[in-house]
Length: 477
Image (tube, rainbow, N blue to C red; front, side, top):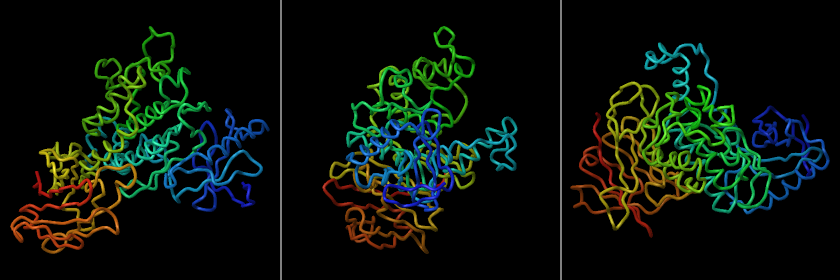
């Protein structure tokens, strides 16, 4: 398909990236350019002149909204000349959460890893699903990506703007590693909170009041949609699709369709603290995928927030909770899954013993409390390649830049090499127990012996909100 924009630039389509209720997003032969074609309710390109004018007006409105300049949101850069749609910039080789995390699993998946042998004997499809879960970042990788997604939405809300139609189809990623980037696309419905707009939504992600037609899109409906994304990506199940839905629902309701009952907020969520009627054994349990802080956020979002929207936690609460959970999570080298290593002496999936860890506790200075404000775990047997310590270890958590690398740690003969990142983070000083009477010295490119690390090491991150960071060994279980 040949497409021309308002500035006479020509693009050629190269496949579909995604399709939703409002349009189709196409790749082009230019790897960093995508095109959105606006469609009608039937999924057909807009042909009605009035509808095309309205779509163009939405585009013009979107282009003047006060979006943060560095926000990873694929915004329009040019309108199409002869069609309802626009051109947007997108990083090369990006894929949606839906494509990465919701791939269908075959009933005959082929050879599975040995740690899944027992699961496969009872349920081959569940075993294939777990193998796919491990290959796509497991819990740790998902937590990091969700933290980045939540930060984008929180920054959008801080600017007074609502995203609108949020789903796994319009969250895009460059991969599943710690350095992967997360973007939102399909920004047609972004508008000010409280402003009347087109209340489009994707089935399954809409807040109950939006699905029932009792409310328009808002900060609160965005928070519900993000909660659905986070829960389904982490736990492999929809938060409202439990046994009542699978068994046919509560027939005392006026609506016969149990799926609709659930989406309209008439059924409890599957982990409801006060009502277990819609529980399910499907998916992964909360204790394997969530910290207690995250579990509380889900309960507030889907428990009290189901019927009382103002009780849903604001987006501002999610990024820090997700990142903190990721930093306490450890990848298992034996099976590729990840788990919360402070709580377990072995991997809950394959029973491999927890390896030797470097525990990094960050305390506020000068009021050093017994409990750290941040904890970061690092497996010492995987430091042949440099591992990065992000800014959130050394500074107060921020929505933008909390994952920028500040210090790298790499194994070398006799110990470890610590290197500062490029122009990022506060000035650092290091002190070693029993060396130079424990005095601090500058930390730029530093060799730390294994014996010194075992005795105790402290790093001071200077600044208006300084941090005292303690490094300690956790021996293998």
